Amino acid sequence: MIKKITGVLAGSMFLFLGCYNDKEEILYGASTCDGINASFAADVMPIIQSRCAKPDCHGAGYNNGPGPLTSYTQIKNAATEIKSAVVSRFMPKDGSLTQSQIKSISCWVDGGALNN
Image (cartoon, rainbow, N blue to C red):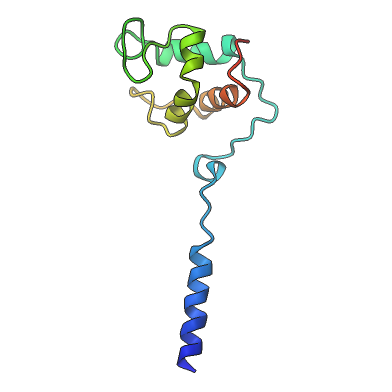
């Protein structure tokens, strides 16, 4: 009888512990881009210019992380890295972006990082 109870408890714990989800939307909030048409020129570039492309971070001539982020080509080439850094709130170093800013960058990257 004790072996049956132990088996049931062990099985229950295995099932309970096996239910962990590591989906991005659970870890970082909803990641849906429905209704969000993030534009490089209107949404992403202003965020990058004001929060990232500073003289001592990712401005011209600096090689921190992906290097300078002053043009569309530089930003597109680092798009996946930028998304990862802002979604994880690792960047920017001088404070966090708003959820709206993070979503704009994330959705722009997910949409193909277009020069729009």
